[in-house]
Image 1 (cartoon, rainbow, N blue to C red):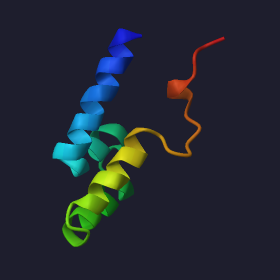
Image 2 (image 1 turned 180 degrees about the vertical axis):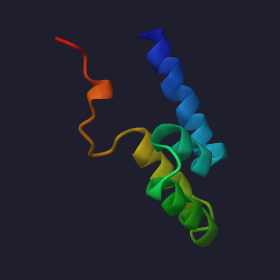
Image 3 (image 1 turned 120 degrees about the vertical axis):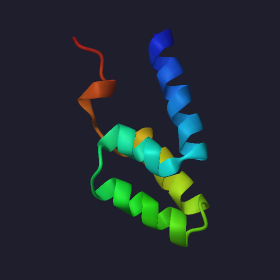
Length: 70
């Protein structure tokens, strides 16, 4: 429980400092990382931060990593 909370806090801090790196750690070097880099460049950093927070915190995503096994 504590380990998951520390990981999530580190991820959120990384989203504010280096959004493309946070997305790359969460999803790998793919389309989401490219979108985040473009948002950071054209959105004056704020767009990249918002996108990184949504990607790393699984906004609207059903992912088995966040579920507890039954």
